[in-house]
Length: 352
Image (cartoon, rainbow, N blue to C red; front, top):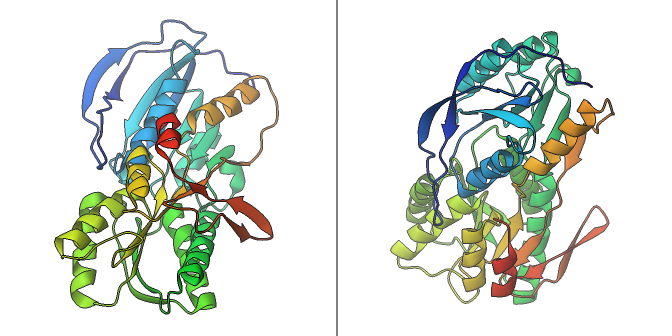
């Protein structure tokens, strides 16, 4: 698909200023900046990011921003929705009004997109979905999706837990489940993975509540769960930030985490801070959710610019990391996945 020849008008855009984070969810402060695409050869991309609730999300935003630069031939219009779908719908409509070439959407939730994406389709603007999937009545409302197989992530993590529990002779597995934002694809997939495994292996999910993918909420939820249940020996957190909060709550309650502690904490994301906690054993196993979507988005845009077909779905490559090598690999759907024992050398080479 060749980019349409357009006459650009001035737009006021809000660019997020990324702050350096040290292991906790941060908000991206924003500064207004008036810019115009002075070169008509620039490809104009409107990006609606769902929020900045976690270190993973910050890495995801950084990947897109560092890829879709003026130097690489793009004019980026970035909008942070602050985890509100209504803000994303408003942003998409502003992108349509500005007649952008492409829309990139990292959706807050799966549903509620049909009307606004129909408007984008009618305007002949390709929409690329990243991270979470959407549930629409007509798949032609979006051009492509880039992200993770969230249920597979959950299945891999649970196969690791089952193998680890057997190797360590754990007689009971009593799980506190801190879910992500309810309705998000990551929450749905990772929850399904756990609930199916719990049924298969006879695990007891003693408590289940959303931590909204944030450290503060993860800590709050964990504090409540510990007061209500004294038999928790595994915490299944659906992202690293929730895990950080859960660990703080566990330690504040006088309990210990880790392979020789009272509670094993499992997580998803494999951010630098998450893997640092995995190296120390505070997080026993961390399953990757690769946030570096920028290059894959650009690959799709380039193919569309050249009039080539693109895959409807593109999964990113992901790994698993654990504190030790008790479990060296797991099998899901007859495929083996390696589990890597985290080391400082591996950590130092990570891109996020």
